[in-house]
Length: 145
Ligand SMILES: CC(C)(COP(=O)(O)OP(=O)(O)OC[C@H]1O[C@@H](n2cnc3c(N)ncnc32)[C@H](O)[C@@H]1OP(=O)(O)O)[C@@H](O)C(=O)NCCC(=O)NCCS
Image (cartoon, rainbow, N blue to C red; front, side):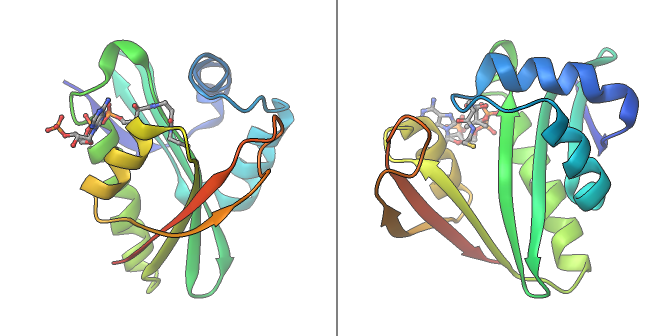
């Protein structure tokens, strides 16, 4: 059992910990505060037994496009539709804002995430070389909701 809700400042430590455990890119912890201050309506968490098990952050690129900046599910809770649920909640919020174009970047090697996003209707649109800190390539994926 889990529920999805908006990120709250008290979740900060758990989100930073989850990001460092599950995401390849290393982020300066202050960036999460910036995302909260700037894009709080698109910053969601999933909680199970008072524990943060997932988060997603979207950013408004312009009045018609959102970019998903980060999505993470705790290893122990994967393949239980947590990712699906938190993504769908974010899509609902985006649609309510009258925005229907969602974009994201994913490592070309991250087959799990690519399959996950494809299952959720996202399509590969482009490839960007040398995109990440370690020189890996990215696919740009997109969905019209
Ligand atoms: C990608 C990620 C968010 C998926 O979260 P999740 O909660 O495990 O995904 P779900 O249970 O909602 O999966 C939904 C569907 O996606 C696909 N999928 C998810 N994980 C998969 C895997 N390891 N292999 C193949 N397909 C997969 C399946 O079609 C799955 O449906 P099914 O279980 O009925 O077959 C999670 O693996 C994760 O946090 N990965 C590390 C961080 C990351 O890569 N983030 C995304 C890039 S920013």
